[in-house]
Length: 290
Image 1 (cartoon, rainbow, N blue to C red):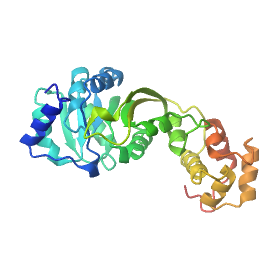
Image 2 (cartoon, rainbow, N blue to C red):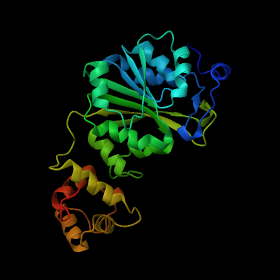
Image 3 (spheres, helix red, strand yellow):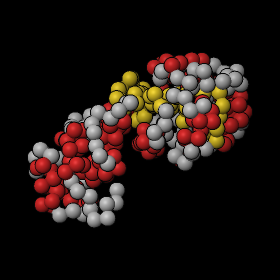
Image 4 (cartoon, rainbow, N blue to C red):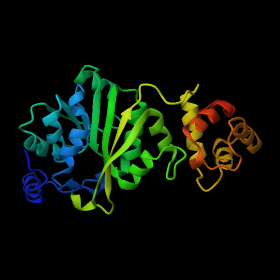
């Protein structure tokens, strides 16, 4: 069903199925006709075995993806939307809707079953409250992914795309840049949704790297160190690392010096290369837990 972005069509479809918006699930439906076609085109969906969509909602983006992709598998948590999607996607035989929580599903098994283990893309309008957990899981799962194209809160988009060492970066920025090359594609105003959220959005694409840009001996420890460094943003990296990892401050300062990092540096000032070096010079706490 095309023209799913029209408020009148949305109300009619929802009314036929007795569906009501759920704030708890972050349900806001797109009414800007230009957003989803552009997302579908820029996702690289036509160059993969297929596309995984997270949270199809009414199927607005799903329908557009179905026009350019060989196959679309949409993961939807809210079972109440299934009859709605059955209607709106009736003319899309290459779409399959799967019920489940993307944070709990066996994604490797899903890719193997639905796409024969071939390379796929992810394209989704992510609920704001699960943006980072979903992106991190997809990046860290070692799936055959070519790219992730997602709409997220504008501030989250800026944070995700900020390179380590740039203003606004955080621990999630370190993970994103380690696993992918991110770029901000375009902005989406809050008025593009019904009901309108309180913030603007943006669409970003993360192109997965075949090899990380830095070499580390222990990825788990590398990410643990980066998270610990950002745990107390107002403090220096030395103080935050010492408190979060429960390591003596002199030991942390010695590791910073060995990595060529100033003792008063803050986490947001460190580059990806410096985090990699620090994970090599900073010894794990007793027990070696990551």
